[in-house]
Image (tube, rainbow, N blue to C red; front, side, top):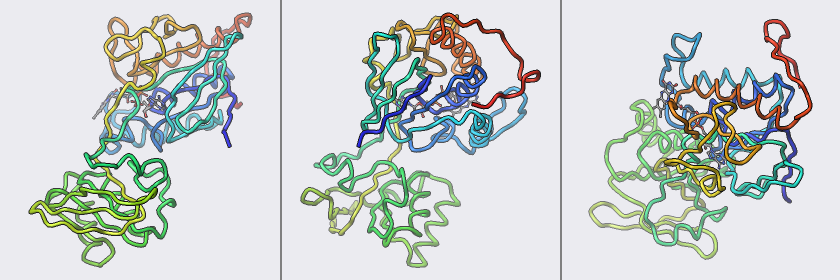
Length: 338
Ligand code: FAD
């Protein structure tokens, strides 16, 4: 069944800038629905550097990226934003009344009065290993490039491939969910955090995880659905292992993706905007945060927050051309709920 959502502003991207835009929109009593291609909120902060301290967020001499995301989520709670995670926005259609219809990879349809693209570096695409027929088993047929819901793998036989934090973290987590977990890594040492590598080693010694080092998954097998993979040692010896799912975790690369095809003004992979309100060349569509470009642009979170505030003023005028808006301080009015 197609999922249909109706809202005032659809925010594409749940990075820090998209999340803060929910707050600024909420102050104007505009409802938001946020879509992100990743299974979690936080954009680059959650995906690339959750444990790194940030030092240039006003009012926080130091804050971990992951904690900033947690705080932003708390800050927008009063406005009850809704989320579609793990789905990429693919298409938009502008209707005669000036509103929009957006569609995601999984067919979710969002009707909205304005669109705010807060897509950062673009949507993160998985790095896929070069294995023949791998794509045949995508889309629920046994090959997964990210773990959206660990319950998908309950009581399954899994092969995870990779040597970074994602491969280690999911091996540790899924060891308690799946029936059998095998981690395959082409090297002998891991790129991920040392304490995670140590935990995986301990799980291996306790017989809870199979660890296959100096090896690669080289073939996938199945008839309509994945049922086995071939693991080949760097020396050349190969063995076939029966599996229910194969999870290659070789990182994600950002790509501007479908937004680049929307007919918006684009300059070097970024969306051109008018800095009065961060509007794009299509009235009603705005671009904020790392995804936009203008003279003097700085790809910083604090600049994205400023852009979000002005964008919401612009979107308010677009949605309600006849309504007058007067700036109200939160210190005076508090945070209105929606
Ligand atoms: P992002 O955080 O990139 O989030 C964009 C989101 O949009 C992503 O989750 C993506 O999946 C989603 N998306 C894109 N296209 C689609 C689509 N079509 N459909 C659905 N979802 C989509 N900045 C600072 O200010 N201070 C720092 O100290 C700092 N340190 C950094 C350290 C590192 C290692 C890195 C990599 C960056 C750092 N930055 C820092 C930069 C900062 O992270 C970015 O400026 C910030 O993340 C931009 O936020 P954003 O919300 O615009 O985009």
